[in-house]
Image 1 (cartoon, rainbow, N blue to C red):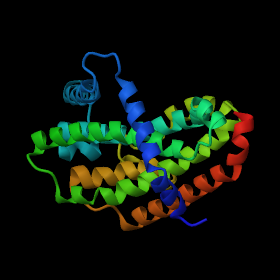
Image 2: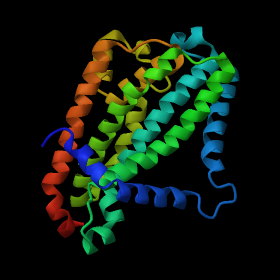
Image 3: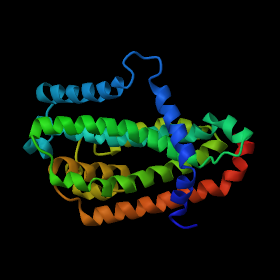
Length: 267
């Protein structure tokens, strides 16, 4: 299997993926008066709350004091956007096949596309939060660093990493519902192991290597560097994170496709 095969399959089924994503997005705020305004209102309230809290009630870590309270609030919000994107995939993927069991059992349905629809849906909400973040950053700093233009070089491999995780969890979740319960226990722990409310520079030097094993934490740090601080990520960290992400992308897809033929019998 080549690395491009999952991308070629996704392109082949692009109309199906687009239709499913559109249906899920339309159902998200169906019946509400404000509709999609809730997708903007939620991140806006959260970012405002962090700014107020860290301005008045909570101290700012030494590593963030040079940037000011508002920049620290932006830093936390950036970390939460990335981690919430990751956590939605972790929570939802184990039950995706059961969620669409009628399609899978009653028709010839390309079940591998469910990872794409789940990831794209999560990306849409993350993009809205990033839009709020960029507007707030412009308001605070009056300018965006030119390194913002390099964000796709980090976001694209992160999306491939999320797809690989989704395929792997979908496959495992089809055999046992314990995987979904396990995610409920693991994800909150991963949140504190991810540099959201702190930076990797706040971690003792002897522990930083272990922190870098958390790929989503690496992506948080790299996106912060490009988006908030106008600096390039460490080249070695970037290369290593992208390489591992591609391995997980390929492994997750291959693992899913290997057992795809028996999913109908076990879900």
